[in-house]
Image (cartoon, rainbow, N blue to C red; front, top):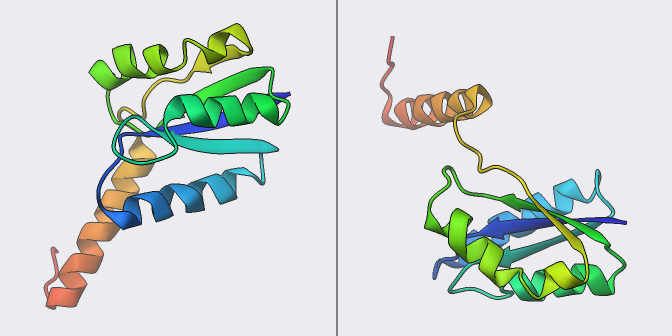
Length: 123
């Protein structure tokens, strides 16, 4: 069975965890097993979330980093934190978000909303 593991950096800001919970809930409509884990600061850590997926029956874990680029967290920290679980399930790490035109639309929408609150038009 496939498990989906959302991976985030982590933050002291409480809303960060609430955001990932919302993403996880939405993704459960597409994947039966979804967990999230943080690289640092917050709980659960990546390895704890991966172990939970294995306990729930995952034999393959698709790791989806909520990161824009493949920095050290992507190249070093995520694989290192999944070493133990890789003995129990196949680990597939998806590419970071990178550039995606769909995100451009979201950013444009956010900018337009901010301008409308200020009563300013960009056109």
